[in-house]
Image (cartoon, rainbow, N blue to C red; front, top):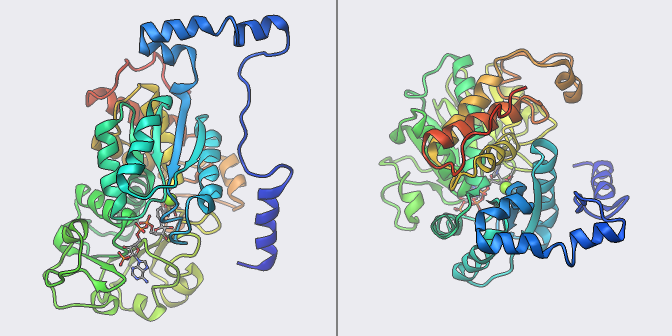
Length: 415
Ligand SMILES: NC(=O)C1=CN([C@@H]2O[C@H](COP(=O)(O)OP(=O)(O)OC[C@H]3O[C@@H](n4cnc5c(N)ncnc54)[C@H](OP(=O)(O)O)[C@@H]3O)[C@@H](O)[C@H]2O)C=CC1
Ligand SMILES: CC(=O)C(=O)O
Ligand SMILES: [Mg+2]
């Protein structure tokens, strides 16, 4: 990152007021009459209504349009465990994206805790205040247990974005990239560098989309995860491969797909050269990918490449999912975000990339053209069609799979 860009980023966050989000009022509060309605005595009336019937909270408060972005700061992007406070700009960023792309109000909550129990108790005890809980940047393997326990305890949808948001976008982009490269997901040899939150969820969802578990090679800091290792947790165990291969260079030879959800600059151009013809590389680590696109394209001209960043083609980033999946889930008051809803999001995102792109999106992307192909396998986050398409597909899937608590609103997301 250049010094100039660093200064720009710091300036953006500091001015004209510190931070990226603020609270705004949705009702008038100017006159004595306004205040009598908003506060005492008028506020007592909705209080009584909600005390009589909890569902009235959706009628009289902002709960139904409010998502909490909650973290402990243990896996901030690819920067590692820098603690709750340092994670605040990222969490405010997620709140900004919820509002900008899906009109959802969102607040960031950074939790200091000693044990998993303490974190789970903290979140479970405040969950009813919100329409949904977006867990963010919590390291593996803690994230798996935390999410499972919160889903059991909370009445509102709980969704770990780094697992499922990333997996949904990766699957959507991957299915399109495979189609363009003329490859079948069932035959594809997949290398996954990283064995944490994003890695495990991405590979599980690719398997649901047709990938073969035994053709996946997952690696952590110690190398290939294989059946003779005795230092792997139960989640890595699911990907233990019965192989003598031990290093990235060993497994990448002849591979069709590389998914990087690990850290910066971990895929050397020499290793990329070893991949099969027409490879697909998703170097998703943020802010710095496993390999820079310019380095990758310098050694392969038959490649489809994605990164997590906004400033390269093919942004494989959970921003293309989380605002829209929560919009759909909240609008039918889904009790959870289940596999049917996740797969509906994959298909909606995937199919949108094949349609002609509106001029306003091309302009906002700062390019001359965008058309389904190697440099456009996935929609741009600012594509206004993502909201109606993904939210509707998700809401329909929630209703059809029986987790919606209200009927589909009449004319929902019709544009
Ligand atoms: N583009 C996107 O939308 C998203 C991208 N990401 C990116 O994915 C990365 C991981 O995030 P997340 O899964 O949440 O974090 P976790 O902490 O849960 O997992 C990190 C994983 O990366 C592995 N890893 C770290 N360094 C290396 C290395 N040098 N070689 C091999 N493996 C390594 C760790 O190995 P070990 O288990 O041995 O510690 C661990 O398995 C981050 O860079 C993040 O920015 C995450 C979510 C969304
Ligand atoms: C994009 C994101 O959520 C991450 O890199 O952690
Ligand atoms: Mg994240």
